[in-house]
Image (cartoon, rainbow, N blue to C red; front, side, top):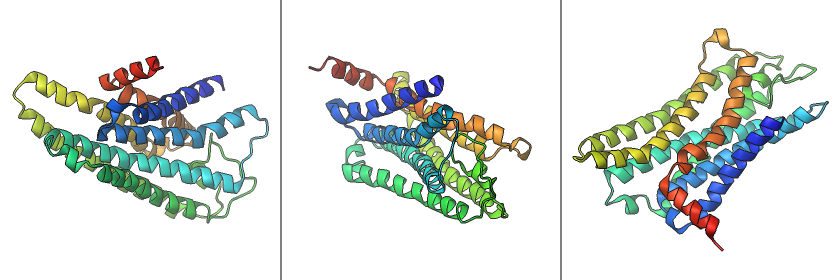
Length: 281
């Protein structure tokens, strides 16, 4: 319990602190930090949906959740996770525009375009969430309905159904594959153009500077999508609820905690803004 509570505190403090810092600092008003603030907001939101109920269950002897509460938790956890996939793709496009079209970057990535990209990420994230929640909670459930998991996730909830869940499991594979394929492809295409542009820079210092703006985003994409791929596309021989629990801890606790560290706190501009914020009177 103490470990979960500590990780949750670090996650919320890091992500919400990053949102406040970016919104309040004059030197962090570029499009890149607008996307980072929304990424931090998504991570904090996802953690808030999953972790508090997990902490309550660790403390309480009788661990219960209503059907409506379970559906709500499932809906928002999928929505926030899918939205983050699309937001990371939008951030890759932002990096592509900044490096490949630096002179046009301010006009291309205008405030209106930024808002549309972020809003589009949220809306697209709602679609698989609506489908999964509707199809899952339209099924009849056996009694007693005991979820062998930390929270209401798709696989353990489907395991409680008395009906055939073949269609639901195909939906998990299909929608996760579609969202993952589209967003990863967008990231790969963006970075292919970035690599092409950077390779034409004559100075080694210029190439390092260009790559340094992308490393934190690439690390975040790798960790986030890596955990999703490992969770949804494991060999059937390892498709067990106990394995799901391990991935759930990493996906719901560790990834949201790491994102502000790898995406923002290693950034020199963020460190300077944090220093100014700490000394502000």
